[in-house]
Image (cartoon, rainbow, N blue to C red; front, side, top):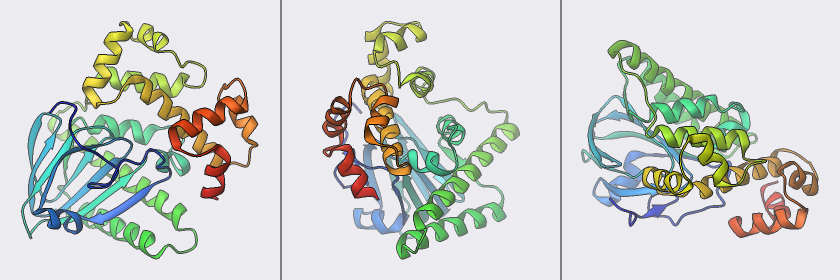
Length: 294
């Protein structure tokens, strides 16, 4: 597939590196029907997606693989993974949930446990739903998530974070049950990338140099760069910067800490350095971002 695949925010929309605390839900038909039920191969830089297939089916592209799927099932698509869909026209029904990873961490998963299991589960992206009661439950949760986003009532952001977390946990449980029943060990799409992400989560505040991570992983910097870029289409440096930005945005939105304190906690030499970094990668200053989000 190479590196010429389109990079979107939502399919057809330009990338949005400023996306934060973002949750979007829509029906499968709402977007695919206007594209002849075909979503061509593409990537999302910073969105995780869960699809709930309630009726119909089709075929998905997942990296270099082509995988058939049928209802009822859930499909997991991590950020930066090349993917596309060809749905059975008209008959296919279900939901597409798109969210930035911080949306779950913000409320219900501060340890990152759910996200880790989602990433591991996505090594086998199609999760059949054998239990009709569970399909009905997940469908009802998706409907509720859609209603919260559409009506935007008081507290809807908190409600949406909670609902997306419950749905994610439900899919992880289904995948765990599948693994037990058919003796499948869930593996991450790429073990090196998973280990690198875990190291970044642990050390991103104090360790910004690729040499540190390459040494931890027992490989050269060039090898680490090539492995990560080949697996997910972005560089290791990009992942480190995005992790710093996620933490910075979280602190700006969910705390009242002075910006200079946030800069110090994130190991920037001074607030002006932090402001330059933040503006370079988001297009606005930390104060502008805080004012915009609160």
